[in-house]
Image 1 (cartoon, rainbow, N blue to C red):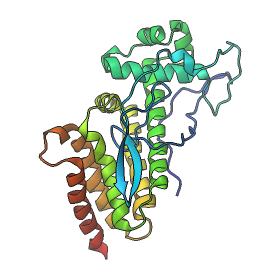
Image 2 (image 1 turned 90 degrees about the vertical axis):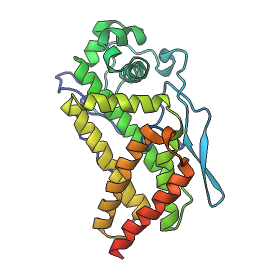
Image 3 (image 1 turned 180 degrees about the vertical axis):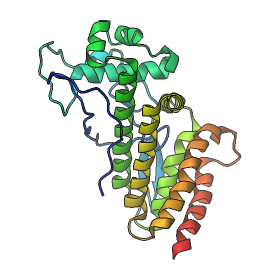
Length: 279
């Protein structure tokens, strides 16, 4: 079944057709990558390094990366004329450059350092140009987080579709192992996710985006991991077990006695016992 769109509007309706009013569905890059929580990808500001993999049935699956910014964010967009007409179903390269720079600034300076003025400097644009696309900091945050979570969900779906796991046990283990592998290191994208957590505690719109993303994770779990092999109640119990564990593990993993592989094996047994409850 199709995944729900993150329930977050990214901009106020505008009279001009030049500005986007809805967040578009982004294309999925043909590579599996994961960090922070399940499926959090790089943006066009970074590339993959130090990849890790999950070995499952002699198949290797890339599931992690270290974020490294490119030298100049202007390389990610072509020169755009000010009078270019932008449809309401896509974002212009300038808007995408602003959102990429916003995410990079959030990673480097935290929520407090993400101001429109600093963003304009980072994107090598005038402040008025940034405000043309995003009238307020809240508009910018909503657009950035919605885009980020949309990419996270798309990458998670791509990861599961490329998995070679066939049995229920293998699919559950693969899903869990992917969710835990990021706990070994604190990547830049994990830092971005933690900043979003902090913002969501003070911003209802961002909190709705975050909750919508977790519901999307539940849908991926139901469709690609469990399928029709168990009842709805078991799926709900499994999600209630895994999501809090993944999030807590990303913070506490480096202090725990078991490594990610051993933890994944233990958690797989717990997950299967939950699924067996409806058998």
